[in-house]
Image (cartoon, rainbow, N blue to C red; front, side, top):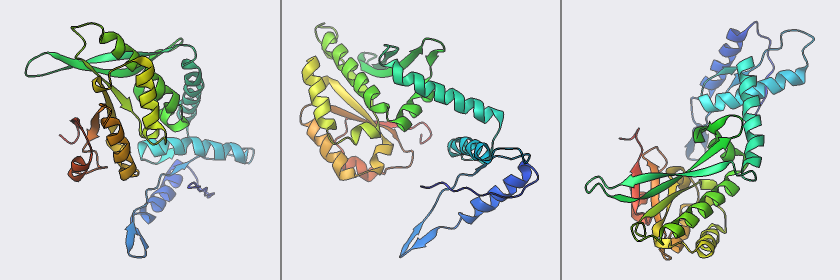
Length: 274
């Protein structure tokens, strides 16, 4: 795939780091392909085999564990027991997350959305939370990336959408809440599914939720893909009354020109961009 192993004689971690620096520097200049210049990112990690008794495959596995960390930190990583502990913890969370939906450990929290001028409640944003039986509340910053990487984001996202729409239908029966909207976060992986539009319309039909009270919140990273396909899906749902919000705008994936093409109701400018 896109991973390569280099075996080299080094005295210590500093020697491995020196080789890593040379590898990263080699990628500083863009590659030329026809008339294009392509910048390639590179993550480097290392594990040391300290004696002739070390199992070479163990050393390679340790390097792969450190490489996962390097891809996250964007820095050179030397394998350590901390790397191993993190990897084991992540594997444990991944295993438990697969069972969390079946065991009803996931719950939705509803964050109020307030109009700053009037001070009135406009709606809610549905936020997934995981109440782990052993670890308590697990941060979304920890389990959402795992769900994204493993594909578990698809059943998780569908559960969030269905649960939020069910609550939306219940709220509509109360006159003081009938005008409120519910925003649901949708991952790029979800939205890229060929039948995503049908999935949303089926959930709305089954729950009886008003599509005009549902807002799908997309992240700017979605715009890296087939933009025309994204626009077509958005307009298909928009024609049924579903609203759209773009989150994390300004983090580098899109430009102002996209705003002319997307049927957006709301724009959330990323804090770093502000």
